[in-house]
Image (cartoon, rainbow, N blue to C red; front, side):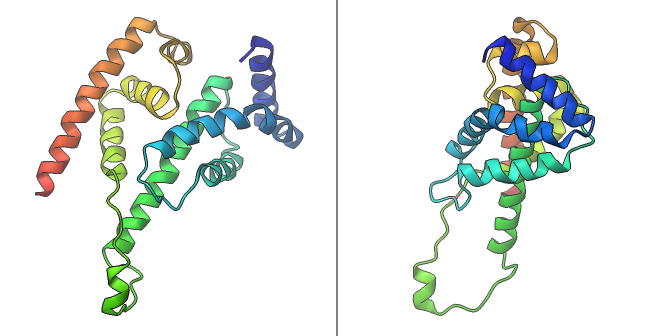
Length: 194
């Protein structure tokens, strides 16, 4: 993204933060493609046949962003980081509601023949990942932010370094350590259930 466009996004974010409603209308076309890219990265990690689509995820993120008027926007990268975090929350909420339904919440009686055709596909445990991310944020907030920006937000090492105001080497180190920590935590969660 060109520097002038990035400055335009930052200016509109600041104006929106001051309560200028027209700023949001001007902002949406400038960031829509990037939000779709982030949403697409999330959806590529979801199971096949997921009922939530990329466009719906972006639209839901817009709705939550509108409600996030109290956020003090810093710049484009901060906006994208918050957007990525919102999308993750949306998918986690969706996964939790699926788990609720899978465990019998809102269940209705089905006949045997219907049951043959209603076998849900297994999906990655987004809830366990979210729990591990929350634990990592408590243990080391910056490493959690690195994962959020790199894995979920799709930012490069350089972009992540700029957002967090650290060196690219620090991002590489945090990224490596956070992945190892999350893998260990996710392994603990899987074995504690068995």
